[in-house]
Length: 224
Image (cartoon, rainbow, N blue to C red; front, side):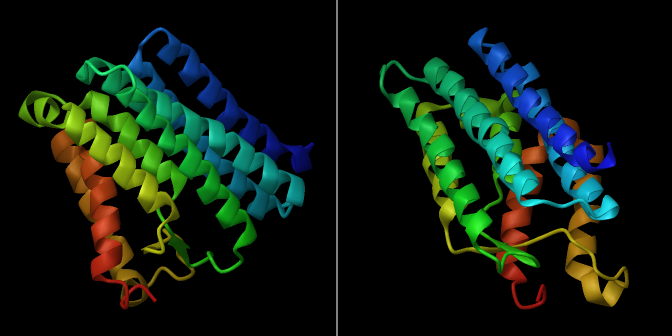
C-alpha cells in the first residue's frame, strides 16, 4: 500500500484541479483559488512522501506532470479567462488567458527532460505561477481596481507565460543543510514571506511570488 501513497496524493492534486474547474464553470473564482492552493499542498506531499518512503518511480513522475497540467495549467488559465471576460468588451481577448495552459505544458515537458533542475529551476515553476494568478481575485481596494484592468491582465497573462519557459534561473526551496550561512537568502525569503502574510493576509501571495522572482534575480550568485 505504501508504494501507492504518493500516486494517491498526486490524484488528489488532479482532483483539486477538476473541482476548481467545476467552480469556474459557475464563474466562482474564489473557490477555484482555494483548490489551486490545496493542489499545491498535495503536489508537495506526493514528492516528499515518495522520497521518505523511497518509492519514487517513472510512472509517478509522469502522473505528477499530468496532474500539474490540469491544476497549475488549465485551472489558472480559466481563472484568468473569467477575469478577462469581466474586464473587456472584446470577445476574443479572454482567449489570451490560455497561453498560460500552453506554456505550462511546455514548462512541465522541459522539466521532465532536463536533469539539471535540482538545486534551482530554469523558468517559473507552474505552482508558483498558478498561485500568483489564482490570488488576483482575492485582492481588494485600489490595487484590485488597478490590476483588474484589461491591459494589466493581458500583460500578466503574456509575461507569466513567458516566465514559465524563460531561461531565468530561480532558486528551489530545498535545504540540504539548515545552517544560516548556507541558506541565508532562502531563510530570509521565508521569513519575509511569513511577515507579509501576517500583515496582508491572503493578499500577500502575489507579493511573495514577485519577491521570489526578484530575489532569485538579485541574489543569483549567492544562491549557488
